[in-house]
Length: 100
Image (tube, rainbow, N blue to C red; front, side, top):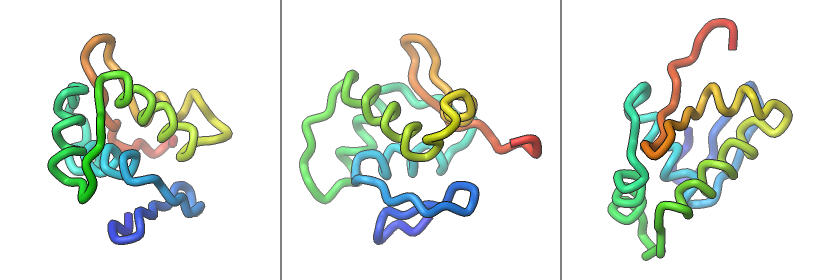
C-alpha cells in the first residue's frame, strides 16, 4: 500500500481508495486476524484522519461494503472471505492463503 496517495494493489490491479475506506483497510491490515469492533474502527478513522468525519456504526458497514466492492469487483464471495465480518461484532482481514 502507498499511504500518501491511498493506493493499494490487488492481484496486480491498482486500486485508489477514498480516505475513510483507506483508513479502515489500513487498520485491518496492520493487525491481520484481529477483529475490530465498529467502535474501534470509528476511533481509528477519527484519530488518523486529517479531516473530521461524522462516522457511526452504519457508516462503518457501508465503508466495508464499498471496500469489498472496490478490492474484489468480480468476486463478492472472495471479498467476504478476505474481509470477514462477525454478527454484531466487527470486522477482520484474513491472512492470505495460497489458494487465494
